[in-house]
Length: 102
Ligand SMILES: [Ca+2]
Ligand SMILES: [Ca+2]
Image 1 (cartoon, rainbow, N blue to C red):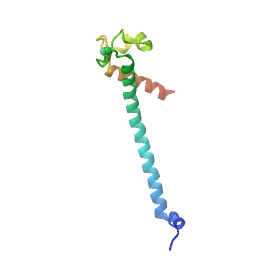
Image 2: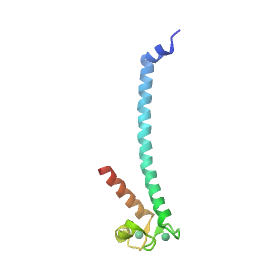
Image 3: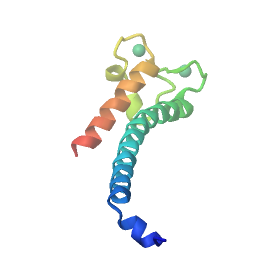
Image 4: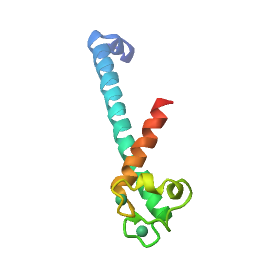
């Protein structure tokens, strides 16, 4: 009767553990991708929680603080006087891109 040790040394067992390592790595990679997406969502939500005082889903000039206020005209891409979720998303993408370039 083979011991547990000799089963682990079996070629098929080695193959299976190698396969599981590859599958595990793939799962980690896709988890990182969804992390990036959820980090972006979290960032947008954080900004809105922080600055969207009247909770209309966008930041007006008098709600904006710090860099958001000083860059308001740049961040308000469509110049409608508000930084909305889409525009916050563009900002989050830009910040994420800057981090990757470092
Ligand atoms: Ca608002
Ligand atoms: Ca806008």
